[in-house]
Structures are given as C-alpha cells and as structure tokens.
Length: 415
Length: 132
Image (cartoon, rainbow over all chains, first blue to last red):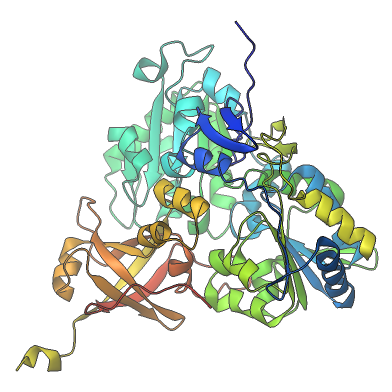
C-alpha cells in the first residue's frame, strides 16, 4: 500500500494530523477526515496577494515601509493577535515588540490565558489528548461544547475511540459528563450525565461537589438536587484516569481560578484527575508558552527600556479602553468583530496595521493591510496543540502571498 | 384605524448567554461579510413564553438594546427544555459584541457571556448590518 500523505489542520487548537487533501494547481478541491470547520479552513486559500494603504492597492515595499513608519512613530504601539500564527512568527513578534517598546497581547487575555498560566506554573495535573484517548474513563466537559468548538474532539480523543487501554470504548468503558448552562450538542451526547446549572452558578456547584466528595450534603442556592451531585461525586471518586476539559463557560463564570484549583486538588486526593484547556485558536497555547519562556508571563506585557511590565492594564481590552496605545499591529485577528464594540471602537482612532489572510472588519479600517498566506494551508511551521504537544506542519498548496513570518521579518528590517 | 399602533410595544428584560455554533463558524471562514454568516449570527434564541409576551412570532425580528448598543436580530425559539424565561442565547458574533459592556473591573475580561438587554418587537425592521 502506498504511503499516504497526511496534513495538519490548523482550523482549531486540536491540530488534527490525519487530514488528506486533493489539490490541483494550488487549489484544494477535496478535504478528507477534517470537520466542517476544518474543510472550510483548508479550502480557504487564495493565490493572489494584496497590499493596501488607506484601502488603495500598493506594492509590497510601500506597504512594508508604511507599516514600519507607523511603528517607528508610535510611543506605545500595541502588537496583538498571533493565535493563528506559527511559533516561529510568534517569536519574531516578541522580538519586534521588544524593539519597538510595544504592548504585546493575544486573545488569551480575555479567554483561557489564566488557565494556561496556571498549568505552566504546575498548578494542575495535566495530560495529553493521546493519554485521554488511550486511558481516560471519566471525562468532564465543563462550560465547553466541543461538538461545536472542536468538532472531532469526542470522536478522535475524548469519548468514542478505542484506546490502547480502553478497547471497549464509550459503550462500556467511558463516562462523559457535561456541566453547562444550556443543553449543548455535547450535553446531548452526555445524556443523563448532563448537569444543567444557572448562569454564573459554577463556583457554587464546585463547592457543592467538593462537599459531596467529602461525604457531606451538597447545597446550592439554586436547589440543585443533592442526590444528583452525590451521584456525580461517586463517579468522579471511582475514576482511574479522569480529565476535566475546561471551557470559557466555566472560566468566565469564576472570578479567579482558586475554586477550580481547589476542586482539582480534592479530586486528586480521591482519584486521578487531569486538566486540559479547550484552546480555540490553533496556536494560542504556543503564544502563551513562547512568551512565558521569554518573559515569565503568558500575555499582557509591555516592553520598556530593557524591562518587561505585566498586568491586565497591558491587555488589549484595558489598553484600548484607557487609550494607552497609539498604534496597533494586528496579526491574524479581528478585534473589531471579536471584542465589545464599546471597547474596540477606540482602535478606529489610532493607525492600525493588519496582517491577515482574510478581509475582516479590522482590515477594512486599517491604515495598512497586508494579505498573508494561511498558516498551515499555504505556509508551514510549528505550533503547540491545546494539550501542550508540539506539532510541525507543511503547507498544502503554494501561494504568491507571503507568510506572516516573512512580512514581520521585512518590517523589522525596515525599522 | 389600527389603535394597536398607539400602544407601547411590550418590552422584556433578558440575560443573554453567548455560545459557539459550528455552522456559524464555518460560514465565517467562508465569508464573514456574507449572508449565511449574518443569518447564523444575528439571532437570539428565546423561551417561547418570552416571545409570546413580546407578541413576536419565531422568525420575526426584535430590537435588543442596552446602554452600549442597539441591534436588530431575528428571534427564534431555543428548543431547550425546561423553560428558561428571562434567559436567552446568542451565537458569539459582532452582533452580540455590539451589546457587551465595557465594564471589566480592570481585569481585561469583558462579560461576553452575560449581557443584559431589553427586547422589543422590531415590527418588521431588517437585521442590523454590521459596519462601522
């Protein structure tokens, strides 16, 4: 049998590495194995490049020169995005931030950054998705709906597959539990093990579950049936290899991670529980790790005269809100769509450079716009999967569009 | 004469929880300025009792309003059991983000999944186009 040529899908933080494609003349015609989002992502390549200044087409050199000039003239530029860039590009961006005394942040500051920071500081016991596939007998999806956000999660790793130590699969050897505020598609799969709690009811549910684990009567102000919490606690106590998949629903509902850390510790006194963050962008975790290695922080930093400052005031949200930044370089992100308009509108008052494979609301309003290759489809590199595993990938097709890495290099040379 | 037009349209307050939808994500990748993305994003999923109270049928448009913004989106029945009056659901999108508070308590994290709005019938107005 001929050896098959597999590609990595960079459509989400799972980085599925078993994708086959049919392509012709640098166009992907068919994608096999990927999910609905992955197929759309892999087919999104475009051959032609576009460089714009003030929404008018220019040549590459003009766009690079204008971008460099914006960064040079700024006292405190914001460099933001990079969740869909390779680790190589991210490291360049960190260097660029240092060089331009910039504020540097990514989307993790308003999603799972706190969780990644905690696990890099060894606050949680962790495992890989391969461990989950091979060993996990109890999995909890908490404030997470992988059926929509990471569509192959349950089939490839967390519930349905046979693993080396789980040959009887979901029918006999796995229990999937969902704790959420609505009956998501994942909750439906979990059947009777769906625990519906009210919005912002997570911290109380954690306390109640911990009481149940300790053999006490679990109580909540929203009168969740104690019998069901006791039943849940019994399943968790009996787990041989448990995993909690942490989603934004849980994280947004907690003021800080302390209740989650307490619960994971309590679970590990009774049984064996690991935590995996449900990272969305394919290399958000890579950004967190690369910046952590350089500075000891995972996001929201400001470089200044050889020092690094860190805190929420250097997050994109707070720095835009306080109008503390005077220019922005946005790489592979669309803050005008993904942030509250009440905050992102301040981006319209400063000169912005957008480096992105797609046209976005932010790119339409940018002073300089550079259309780059889709990383993972039209350019290669390496990234960190949601569980911390390093993945390398090659491009599927060729394009005339430069990679974001090549563009950043040119901007740095022009500075 | 339609005396009903002089009556103030019923108004209710709801708490909106946002969520991810794979069909909407796929539509965004294909064309974030396209009709499919708008149709799958500019939607609020409500309890049938709340829709009744507003005099709005499923598929009709409603106005969502708070001190941060106003958008017109299509109202649908959530299909969720049990009843969840006062709580509604929207896919996370530029439409929901028009309504997210800028109050963060200095944490850098907006309340994307906890949005308080008032809902009224949009009386046939079209869904808001997201521009700037």
